[in-house]
Image (cartoon, rainbow, N blue to C red; front, side, top):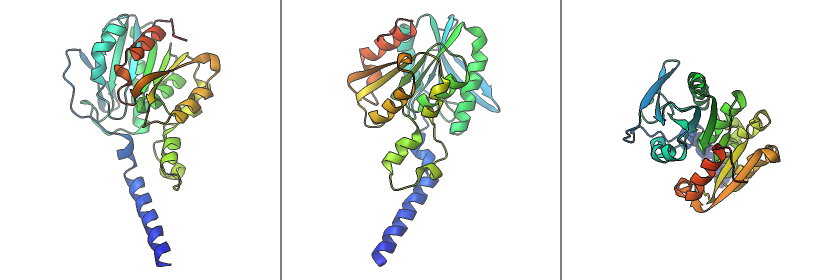
Amino acid sequence: MSVLLTAFLIYLGFGLFLYINQRKYIYYPMPEVVPTTFPTIHIYSGFKRLRITVVNKGQPNAILYFGGSAEQVNFNAPSYQTLFPRHTTYLIHYRGYGGSPGRPTEAALYKDALVVYDRVKSQHQNISVIGRSLGSGVATYVAANRPIDKLVLVTPFDSVQHVAQAMYPFYPISWMLTDKFDSVSRALSITAPILILLSEQDQVIPHRHSIILANAFAPEQVSLTVIPKTNHMNLNLSSIYGENLQAFLSHTALL
C-alpha cells in the first residue's frame, strides 16, 4: 500500500507541476532582438504595442509570418527579401518576444494576429500567411477568420492538446491544458490553397500530427513536401524549403 500511495502522490505531484508550468512548455519568449537593418513598425493590440519587422515595404502583396515557440523571426528577413521581392513580409514578434511587451497566451496571439491583419490589409491587394510550428496554430486561426490568398504551414500539428496527450498519455490533458491551438478543428473553415512543409527527421512534432492535419483538408487543397535530411530546427536552411515557398506563393506551386 505504501508503494501504491507513493506512486499516486508522485503522479499527482508531477501532474500539478505540469498544470502550473504548462505555458513554459509551449512558449519560449526570445526577448533579445536580433540586430536588423530592416524597418520596424509598431501596431497596438489593445494596450500592447507589437513589434513587427517589415521586409520589402510597399509591395502589392503581403505575407504575415508567425514563427515558432523559440524562434527569432528576424533571421528570416534576408532570405525573405530575396524570395519574395513582390511581397511585403511582416515578421510578427509575439507578446514577450523580440521587443513586444506582455506574455504570450493562445487568446492573446489570436487577437494580435487579427489586429495585424486588419491593420495592413488596406495596403495590399492580397495577404498570404506562413506559420511555423507554434505559429501554424496562429496561421490557421487567421486563415479561418479572414480572407487570405495562400496558407503555408511549416512543421504544423493537429493540436497542441493532441501532441501533449501523446507525450503524457496517463494524464487528462484535455482538462489540464489551457492553450490548445486546435488547428484541425478549423480545417473546414479554411478555403485557401495550402502548402505543408515537413522535416524528414522532426523530433519535436511527430509526423502523424502533421498528417492528421493535412488529411483534414480537401485533397485538392493541399500540397505536402517532406524536406530530406532536415529536422525541426533547420529545415529552413535547405534550398528545397525556399524553392517550395517561392514557387507556391508565386502561384506556381510545386505539386
